[in-house]
Image (cartoon, rainbow, N blue to C red; front, top):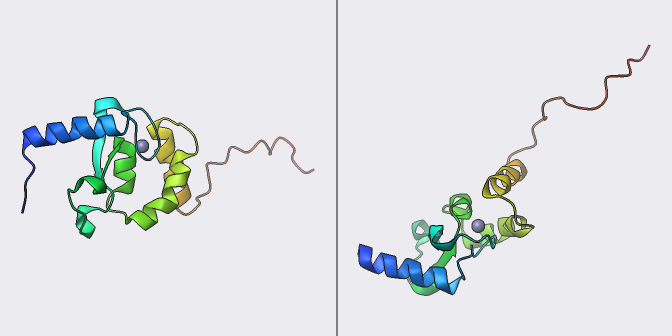
Length: 116
Ligand SMILES: [Zn+2]
């Protein structure tokens, strides 16, 4: 097993950050050096540390993607890219889409008119 030592890791991060213009590869949010290294094909699914498999992305996308297979992620990603939201907004919206619809708290405008 090949380990990435911290010096290499730092160089890799800088290099990836530059390659992706400091932006998340998935939602295009500017993250600068706060980005994370994502394995496009997750290591859990046999992905490697080879450069073509690496993406620079925000922590939110990385968390969302987790060990998702790229094909599965491709279906989720367009909704991530829709617009530039705060990571929290994007996550909440995605979770809402993924989770089965729950009844929101009843805040409807109705109920002022009581049927007599
Ligand atoms: Zn992102």
